Image (cartoon, rainbow, N blue to C red; front, top):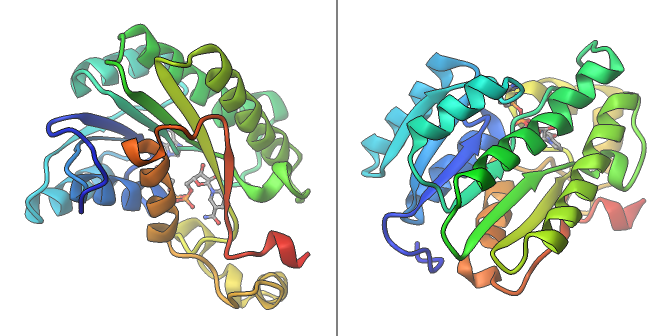
Amino acid sequence: MDLGFAAGQTVVVTGAGSGIGRAIAVLAATAGLRVAAWDIAAAAVADTVAGIEAAGGSAVAVTADVSDPAAVRAALAASGPARYLVNNAGPASSGDLAFARALELTVGSVRLVTQEWLATGPPSGAAVVNVASVAGNHFGTASDWYCAGKAAIAGYTRHLALTRAPAVRANAVAPGLIATPRMAGFAETDLGRAVIGRNPQRRPGAPEEVAGAVLFLLSPLAAYVNGVLLPVDGGWLIAQ
Ligand SMILES: NC(=O)c1ccc[n+]([C@@H]2O[C@H](COP(=O)([O-])OP(=O)(O)OC[C@H]3O[C@@H](n4cnc5c(N)ncnc54)[C@H](O)[C@@H]3O)[C@@H](O)[C@H]2O)c1
């Protein structure tokens, strides 16, 4: 799959041990990128890398908590120079977290990883894609910190797009309901059925469908796309 990436470039993907992050890592390798796959769960990210290597791709597994500054610096050193960054890791909205800590995990970690990555001096043509959500950006949900944190990621993305251009492009995706391990069983609940019933596509999205949008925004195909928040929700927003 040729999206125009130069050979041998590295992408850091956080939360690459599961769900959307794993799908992004796999698709990035298919597009010819070397993948530095980060996750707090060592066995999970090792599985992701094993799958990529078995398919002929290039990847390195890095165990790191993206909210820990020392761990993030060590992870960047272990990854090697990276032209591309995908900030995908974040806590599940169902988590019972104190507000300040939750924001630190949700958007503070995105800023931390990005700042440290920028400090490595990524080569020209660099790009970052952040994973936000329709929650907070387009509608409210039960979790106050999740809505606040995901909206903050969109704001931070626009800040980067303005202040770091032209060296770096920054964009974000806002997934709707995506069938990943953390959402297991949700589609069968009353709320899940209601959400899917109002979706023009009548189904949750697949992690690979978010990965496609992320890889496009990261790639040279999107060279003049900067500062957008792209919903990846099957048209759910326009049906509300
Ligand atoms: N699934 C959805 O419906 C949905 C919708 C909108 C946005 N999102 C966002 O997409 C992203 C991925 O979600 P998912 O559904 O694929 O979840 P997931 O639970 O399947 O995967 C998340 C991965 O991130 C890792 N992770 C969590 N905290 C970490 C940390 N501090 N440091 C490093 N790794 C960490 C986990 O170990 C896990 O492997 C999240 O930011 C989530 O908020 C998901």
